[in-house]
Image (tube, rainbow, N blue to C red):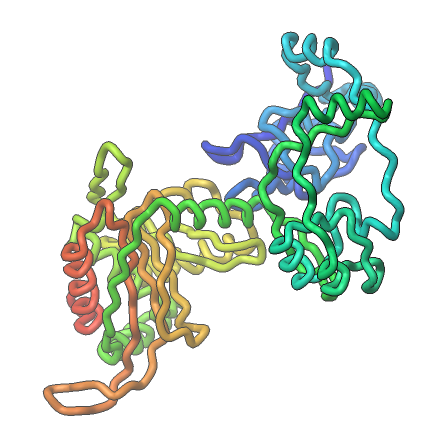
Length: 437
């Protein structure tokens, strides 16, 4: 009997995904553990492995298909000893039927009125539902109340320009429905179409500038949604400290010499992950999540580290960062970052975390404010270390200094508690032996 292969749930929250790429084709023999497809979730692009053995009879969902619901049959596999042609003949999964009540309403609904004849091409400088007009022409039209749909454009390709709307008249207010009906009956003309329901304003861009439109991935959509929600719902408070790096850089050099035989090379970021983990344990009021009705207090510091990938930002987690050695953090971080860029992280490797770290120092960014990654209560933004004038032992000198900024959820973390954590972090970085002892 043919085996139905269904869209898997690759994370606890996954409801649908994009079938990004098929790694097999019809007629291929697969066995348990073989990679069959790449599936893009709202978090990452992940590989889907075969569980059953058989021959690919029919692929029912084409690669590149968006919004494939979890549980949808995406492929039919012929089992051992079965004819693949039987599986290939399997019908495509039927679409979900509309509820009977809605279906009966649809049957009872009258046929839509015939659409009015289109306006002459010259008198409507539109392409589909979008009017072609310069930004200045649109602004003038809005100020004067001129309906651009009825304005003939004299610009390139019928584009409406300033001169076309300067002499235009404001659109007359719509007549009352009764008056419209009477006028229609008197003139025996077809009734005017009802005004469409209000829609969100489309994002405008100048399509005369050479450009290309790139389809948003599920990951990019999720990043946009989560960051927007964070800035709209989480009251951020930003606290910045300047930290002297010389002692940490010296320690890093000494540790790297001793770890060279093991093939481990520590980065500054590895040491900062350790420092943030220790600081969160020493300042537990910042290692929290606000839920609206409760304050979740964590006894372990799991640090999410921002990693840039070709498809967007993802935050693999160094669990229990405070109690791990810096060599273990370094080895784990290299593995996680590498697999993150390949889209091969497991959900449990990037979902969760109690706080985040984002480092832009490698780009020369001096200081920035990061957006909190809900439901976490804080994120640390790390700038570049650079030589700066600095007071050392009450005398002006030169030191390697970096600026770090903590973004805190002010609903859960008071400014004084955030400041206490930043003070601890500064002390750990400037006297780093304390955090590795």
